[in-house]
Length: 319
Image 1: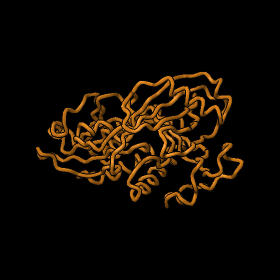
Image 2 (image 1 turned 90 degrees about the vertical axis):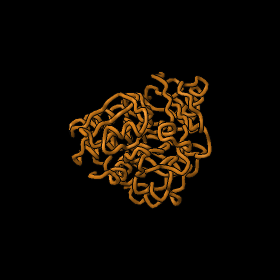
Image 3 (image 1 turned 135 degrees about the vertical axis):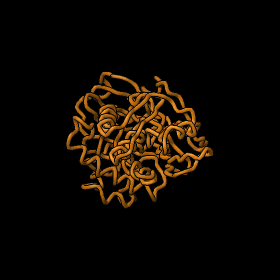
Image 4 (image 1 turned 60 degrees about the vertical axis):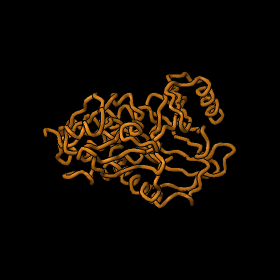
C-alpha cells in the first residue's frame, strides 16, 4: 500500500492527529467529506477550556498536553492563529476545578471587581484562544510539509478505507454516528454571532452546564464572537434569528456597546458529543483492517486536540 494511514475527518482532531503521525514518518492521507473551513471546528469559539467533555479522569492529561503545545504556538499568532488571552469564567469555583488547573500559570479565583454585575464567583486565567480558520489552514500546511495529503472525498465505510491503508484513524466527529456506527454520538448545537469589536480585549464566559443557553464573548482578530447555545440533540445547521437576537441581548447586558455593534455574520456548529465521553480505542474491523477511533470530543475538541492526537497515535503501529 502507498498509504500507511488514512485519517477520516479534517476538523481540528483529524488534522492534528494527521500531523502527529506524518511527523513521525508515516505516509498519511486525510479523507474528508467537506473542506476544513466547513467543519464544526472552523466555527468554534475555540477558547482552551475543558468544557462539556468526558471522561474526567483522562481529560486533565489531554488538556495539559494540548496547553503546552498551544503555549509554544502562541509565539507565532499570525501564522498559527493561537494567542494567549486573559479573561474570566464566571460562576465557577476555583476549588472545584480539577488537578489540571495547577498546570495553568496564573489561574486564580477572580476578584469581585473582575466579575460582571450579579456574579459573585469565578476564575481568571490567561489561556489559549484560537482563530480557527487561521489555525486549520496552518495545520494543513504543516501536514503537507510533512508529506501528508488532504483529499475532499467522503469515506463510504471504515472497511472501504481500510482497503486502502494499513490503518484507519477515525476522527469523523458527528459523522461517527453513521460511520462506525455509534448511536451514542449526537449533536449539541452551538450558535454564534460575529460582530465588530467595540473595544473588548478580554474573553468572558458565564458558565451554566445545565442550560441550553450560554453567554460568552471571545475577542478574535477582526471580530468579536458572541455566544451562544448548547442545544442537545438539535441537528439544525441554519442560524435561528430569534436565537441570534437573544445572544446579542444577553451579551449587551454585560457590555452595552455590543447592542450597537455591526453584525458581521452568524455561525452554527454541531458539537460531537458522545455518551461515555471521548473514544480513543483500537478495533479490528470485520474485514480485518485496523481502525483507531478518536472521536466524541463534545465542546472541547480544540482543548484536547494534541493530547488526544498523541494518545490515538500511540495505538497506530509505527506511530
